[in-house]
Image 1 (cartoon, rainbow, N blue to C red):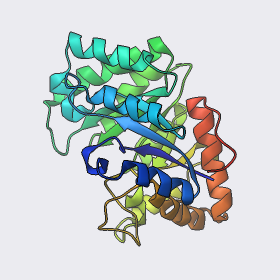
Image 2: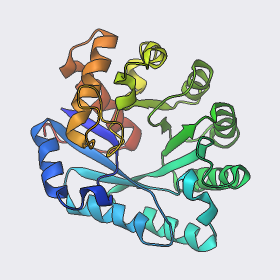
Image 3: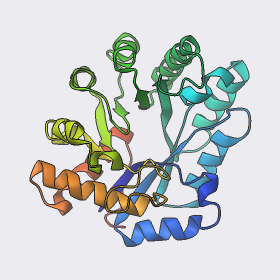
Length: 265
């Protein structure tokens, strides 16, 4: 059994075959998918993610304002986000939130402010958080240390691509670390070295679909069924069987997000 701990199956690239995508995940042994809602908080895109989780028994949802969209965050967006978080028991986390200094689609100071505000909202609502960080290791870690220290809930660094120092600081805060298909890429040996060091009880696996399809499927539209290939690579790195890696990461997912998983896909 496997869990795709971060997917975007509500997106338009799955509009033509969403039912089939979910069915293929089940057939591949993926028992649960966490669908992460992002996009314009004023345009119904957060609510769309919740609707996907309500439609499929094996899909949960998270919602949050991505750093790309931080410039759109205002009191009305905060209200819509709060309502989306409270709208369904299928919503289990706030995210993805964080900092992205690669694209800078929103001004950095705005990203920082919105990141802090959403962390405080998550603490108030006792929800785990899903963190996006790209080329912002130091500020992401420092913000988490300032805002999340002593929180009753944990969080996850999704699609991890940071360095050893950030990894150490996040683990010290009780965070989990999730790897996507980029860990399988030919040029990702530094990332694989870090994957070998993470405590197994903090490890998660994801697709971040439709992006980052893993080797040997690179170049295709990614989908939750492909998470098995990333799990296969991580199992080899950690010296465990594929089945053990699936069980470990599924147990970790259930613990982090406080959900009960099915016994099989």
